[in-house]
Amino acid sequence: MWIVPPVMLLYLLSFLDRVNIGNARLFGLEEDLGLHGDQYQIAVSLLFVTYILSELPSNLVIKHFKPSRWLAFITTGWGIVATLTGIVQNYSGLIACRIILGALEGGLFPGLTIYLTMFYTKREYALRIGYLFVSAAIAGSMGGLLAYGIGQMDGVSGMRGWRWIMIIEGIPTFILGIAVWFWLADDPDSARYLTTQERDLIDARMRRQIGYTKSSEQMHKSDVYKGLKDWKIWLFCIGQFGGDVILYGYSTFLPTIIKGLGSWSTHGSPSPYNSLLCSGCRELPRRGIPLRPHTASRRLCRALRSDLHSRLRDSRQQCQRQCQVLWMLLGCDGLIRGGWYSIGLASQQQPAVREAYCGHRVAAHHR
Figure 1 (cartoon, rainbow, N blue to C red):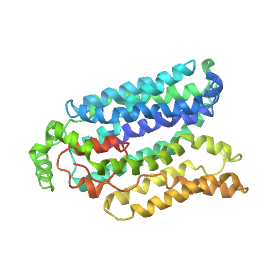
Figure 2 (tube, rainbow, N blue to C red; figure 1 turned 90 degrees about the horizontal axis):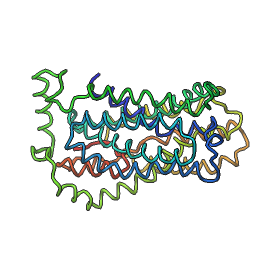
Figure 3 (cartoon, one colour; figure 1 turned 30 degrees about the horizontal axis):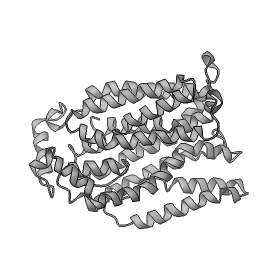
Figure 4 (tube, rainbow, N blue to C red; figure 1 turned 90 degrees about the vertical axis):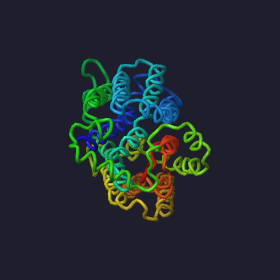
């Protein structure tokens, strides 16, 4: 009620606001703004430039400010920008909104990973990260159906359907940002919903963790520099890059892919968005066993599923195309890695650097 639900809501709306441009494309965004050539693809890509650049600074800032205040600030900010995207009138306005949106959203997931370590031990933390991935899957699953319903407002008040999608999906984020200011506790000591005995229990459990020391709670610049120089962190980044290209590629362009299938409409046959939900739900048992050694096999499956995408054009049977899309989507969830490395990090600053540099998709243990 006080920790996981608000965290899941934050990431759900973040994911929804980040990829809803894919649904907006089907409801007149390109025609209304006069986009041509690669302008749409550029607008999609530029968000991730500022998204990546803001992750590490945000993770360091949250150590100086209260988490509830910082998370509320960036959530309210991107909620405003996401809503205002619905009233832009040209390509330049869209680009400006996407750049600012990426800068504000970039600090959310790394910030949430830091926040969760204040309340949960390493093994408990893995499952809570699984909850975040489930919330992203829910956003992907319901995003298309929600956009289809909102898109039917095309013409209301003289606005195209894509504008209503941006506005209606952005307003809840703004409201949640204000609520988070009062909803989230900054740490166990400031949590009003915890008794004195419960706070003592959390503190005792944290101290029993391997590598935990009181100094690891403090900010040390040397730890940040060590994190930046650690070759294992950069190796993580390279491995994560390939996975994220697939994840965000399909998350953003799935509506366009589905439309290209022809007869598979949003309101027709079984929706492929449901496989995103199944994909996320598969995270839960795996996060409960964070050190299970099957990362390599999952990478192989993901590579094979990506290869299926190149075969879609050659598939003449509609059913075969549908099955291939479903199979690919089931491989777009997060890979299990990071646990073997994070367990040995006593300081919070090195994991903070790693979480930010790995494109916010590192799973398993932290702290």
